[in-house]
Image 1: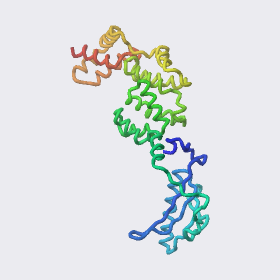
Image 2: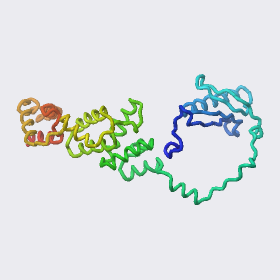
Image 3: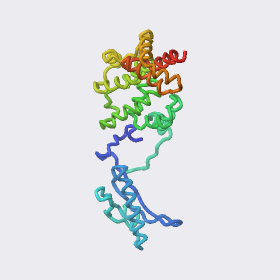
Image 4: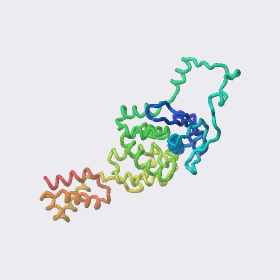
Length: 306
């Protein structure tokens, strides 16, 4: 939340995150025992390790008949143990007292409402909106709202014309995989949201196949530089990734493949579906992967079943 609303960069390695944890244990049915305060934890992993160790330590102390003394402790990540810094007998040792230079702070309700109205949409609300307005699954919506930068990238892709579901699939799949491999954030992604939207659009309008889209995306990623969306169309032309739009040429390839594969035809007509897949593969190979798979399937069905 603090990174989402822009009040903290969340960089725990640089000390942007600090927290304390108060730990006390009790036997079933009894009141909570004396607490010990673990100070200055700077990561969620260390916080969990420190709390787990402190719980075990306090239980062992009590089971051995020793009393827990209120104290401030530090966690040593190298040893995985806590150690006492100083003891506290009661609240007075903390020197709690009213500061005469700090008058009571009264926050007006209208100011609270004004600030609330100026706050950005929070992740849970945004995820719910993605589910309701874009038809995404709860899982996908939650993944996309892991960071404000990721959500903005998705929104930018949709605003640029990408269908929400394919955009979500690309972002949480191929893009996330590459970001993790290179240990970079979505802000450093070499492929812009507008480029992704154009790529998804070219799949949708039949210009390129899914396989060609992966080749295109790989080239876009290698080039980097956040090039204009038009670079997508230029690369499709340069790499020769367009699907065949000439139905006559595709029919000729299908007929040629069928003429050379009488065995597969016979097997298909005897009920072996794998033979049909083999014929599809032969057509795709003959077309150098440029044939539209849906058209290939339809043409083969017409030729074989007609």
